[in-house]
Picture 1 (cartoon, rainbow, N blue to C red):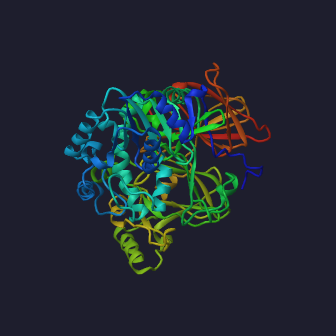
Picture 2 (picture 1 turned 90 degrees about the vertical axis):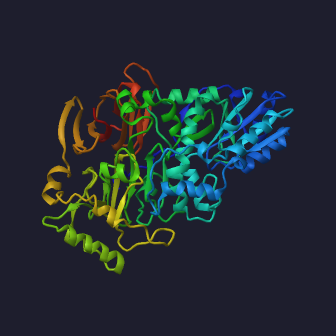
Picture 3 (picture 1 turned 30 degrees about the horizontal axis):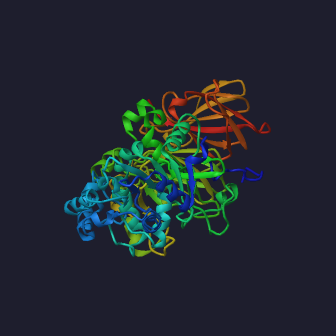
Length: 582
C-alpha cells in the first residue's frame, strides 16, 4: 500500500452547527420533558416515522411520560398486509433483484375507513393526543400539533433487516430474506416515505435521531434547518459506510482503520447520499440523519440549476470503493442501456461508471469489453453452461483482461462487460442507480449468506455491446488522459468519462495551490494522492476544510470558486473531480 503513514482517514465527519442548550435534548427523559412543556391540553403530538424506526419504544416512552387522553398508532390505519402485498407485487415483479420504480404514495397504503375513524377519534378527544407511525401527519392534520420527525438512514435500516428485527412497510415479512426486504424497501418503502418526507421537512417542529433507540437525540427545527443550510454553503463529507462481501479485500481495513472483527471489507459507500448519513456536530454531540435530507431541502444550492433541472432532487454522482486487495474478482457484469433501464425498470438514467485505481497489486487486472471476433451466441451459451453445470466460464476466451496499476482510469459506459480483478483498490465513479447490475458470472461463488448470488444472463445479453472489442476498448476506455491546463505547481488532466456518459472527470496533480470552480454544478472529489489537503474559499466564504487521503468530499454548486493546496509538502498530491457535463 502506497500510503505508508499512519491512517488518518476520518470515518465520522460532521458539520459543526452553533446551537443553544435548549435546542438539544438527549435521552428519552429530556425529550419527553421538552414535549410536555410545549404540549397544551388539546395538543396533538404527532411523531411521523421513517420506515424502520423502532416504533415500539416510541409508544412505550411517550405513552408512559405523556399519558395522553387519546392515542393513535398508524399501523392500525393501514390496509391488511395481504392486500398491500398484492398491491405492491406488480411493482416488485418475480425477479429476485429488480422491480419497477413507481408512483405509490402513503395514501395507497391507508384504509380509508380506518383513517377516517382515527381522525374522528382525534376530533372527539378531550385532552392531549399522541399519534405515532408512518403517515402520522396524515392522521393528525390538526392545526394545534407538535410535529416530530423520527428519522433513520438506509444503511441502518439494512442492518435491522439483516438482523430479522424489521419487516417492510405495513408488512409482516419478518422472516423474509434480507435481500427481499431490501428490494421491497428500495422500490416501494423508501420511495413512498421520501415523497411524504419532502413535504414534511419544511414543517417539522423537532427532528428526532433514532439510530440508537437507547440514546435518542432531538433537535429543534431551527437547528435542523441551520445545519443543512451550513452544509450546503461549504465543502463537506457524508459518513462512509463499509460492508463485507464475498470478494472483499483488506486494503480499506488498514488505510481506513476499520474494525478487525470482519473477515474483509468489500464496499465502502463514500459518497452515496441515498445510503449515507450526514452528521451535524452540536458541541460533542452528533446528530445523524440521511444525507438525502440535504438533497431534498436544498436541491438547487447543492446541485446547481442545470443539474437540478435535469435530475430533480436526486444526487446523480456516486463515489464508492471496491476493495479486492487480498480478495477475489468482482462478478463479471454489465449495466443496462438507458432505454432498457427506462423501459424495464422505470429509471430515467442508467449506471454509467468508471474504475479509478487508488492502488493495485503487481498482478491487478480489469476485465473490460469482449475480445476480437467473439460470437455473441457462443459466449452467451458458454455463460449459461457455466451457470447450469458449475464448470468455470472460459473468460480468457471471450473477455479482455487489462493490467491495472495505481492511478489508471478505466471508463465503463453502460453496455460494456466488465469487472475488477483481485488485488485492486477501485474508486468507482458512476451515476447513482447502483442497484441495476446484471451479473453474468460470479466465479462459482456463493454470497455471505451461503446462497448463490442472482445471475442475470438474459438481461445481460440484451445489453452487451459486442462492438466494444479489444481495439475499441483500448482506444476509447483505457487511460484516455488529455492535458487540459497547468499553472505554477499544478496541472489538470481530463481522464474521462466516455462521451456516452454524463459525468466529466478531471485529475489535478499539485504541489502548490490549485484554483477550482464548481461551474454552477455540484463537484465531487477524492484525494487520490497525498496525505492531507486544504480546501479554502478565496473570499473566506467558508472555514478552511481539511481532507485526508482517500476521502471523498462534496463541494455544493453554490460555493463557486474554491482552492485546494497540499498540507503534505513532501510529495505531489492529486485529486480526481467529477461533475455533470453541461
